[in-house]
Image (tube, rainbow, N blue to C red):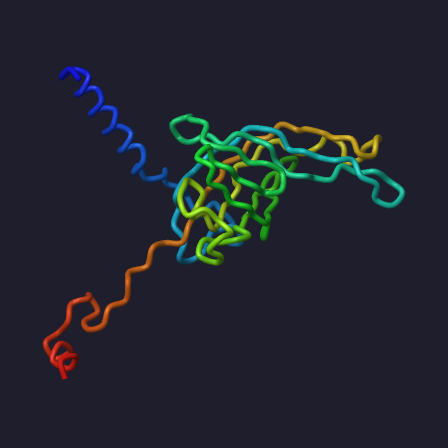
Length: 206
């Protein structure tokens, strides 16, 4: 390999490493309702935006037929404007590296009239809960909580529908905040900073 190609490869690897370790953009938590925040012990891993369609199905509800939400179908994009995965109906988030997380909605807040609610989504199988339920590697492997904020669109123009079983796709956009459990320092006996004091050392020798 020529020196020029070797240098180019080194620069490329360095840039990829920088992207991989880049901290997520700062998020003003004060504007997120307390019920939607990730909670203690959670760290923000990634901020992704989504543009796609909110999916609805026409179902009978007593004497009328209404549009019932099935979920969102959209592409997830990172801060460098790269497509990195998808969100699909049923609360599934799938990364292009094949890691995924299935979520359930456990809190919502209607922030702006005429748009999708902001929501807090909890992983159905949090990392560590089951050895076989989740992959251990990949973008979404450690995701435990997702907050959906800054929504636009996504609601049907009319709650009533005419053809039972029909589908409706409504454009929407949103920002998704991905959280995982913050790493905890391993407990060590002895001094609080992990170093053994002389007395604790002597007691362990007895």
